[in-house]
Every structure is written in structure tokens, then in C-alpha cells.
Length: 64
Image 1: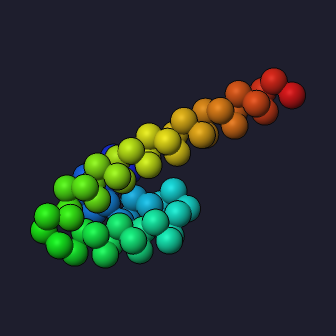
Image 2: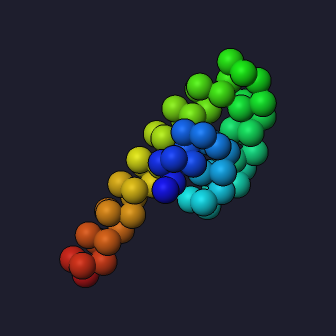
């Protein structure tokens, strides 16, 4: 679901992963038609990083 948000409403994806400042910057970028594509790519990338961070945290908790 977050991936669909990252593509169609990139700024919302940042708010769902707890990065409101990045969401505001992404919204400003998304306002322009040319900036929408970089905003979507950035949101998808950030979402991937968020998922990776979550997996690392889980692995570290299991290790301890």
C-alpha cells in the first residue's frame, strides 16, 4: 500500500514512515509537474530504505 502512495502521492509516503520534514520538502517538489517524477522516485527509494532499516532492527533485537 505504501508503494502505491509513494508513486501517486509521494509526500504522503514520507508521513507514513515518520519523516514529516522530508514529506513537506517532497510536497514542494511535487507541486511542479516536472518535480513530480523525482519526488516519486525519492519516495520509493526512502520507502525501500525504511524497510531495510526495519529488517536490521528486527535482526539486532533477535540477536540480543
